[in-house]
Length: 317
Image: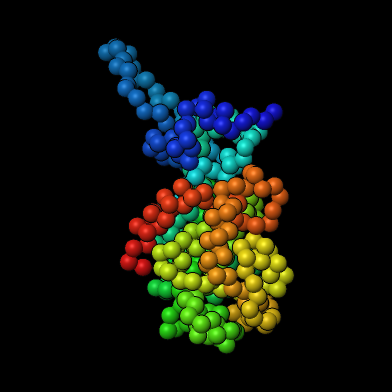
């Protein structure tokens, strides 16, 4: 049996402006028997003087998903309900969990990795995903030109992407494609590169990818005023990036010694991404099957909120 998500939200009293904050706001307390569990707060009942103290009530069972790591990972710029509650209909098990809001351990969040914990989490995911494809990785070093964005769903790390801004030191892609990049620079392009992209294969990848790329676009284009993004990808992924975000090849296939795999250089003007978002963002339920990520982007009103928080979180970077 499936139930309309709007009916569920209406029944549990969640308005249009608070659908992304389904999780209970009561603080979690930790017990010796397991991870943090949420308890209800309220006025205590006074026991009779002759009666012994009432025993503490048992907490609810541990949630299916562990809570987010206790270490500081970053500053949140996107805060939605969990990915499994994004659909227009819900199966009975998810309906029951949505109605029992204290069971939900957080939603889908994207954070700016401002702390060592977040950067370590991103590096672990990149290493794990690259290893499954036979790629090599190099340790992530602190770089003032590099900003890392990390996505969590119900407390679990599900994706990451980093953005490196061009400078006198150049980009990582200059190692293989200096001539192609210099040609763009001579035309006045302000370049950045998307790098160290990884998404957990167990989650719905399109919402994660779209959210990460949308935040990366807002940071590089709108806040920092860069004009073009480049990315080095495996030749078999060229068609995906072309259809997903409008990237086009500008460099031939070469061997990337950093990851020990072939690479092709792709480029997209941010004007192309802006147009795609303006036309399609927030309309994934209306466009049918598509390989584009634009319908999964933030709708205009939500984009403004994300942009405002992103400005605050990245001020001074």
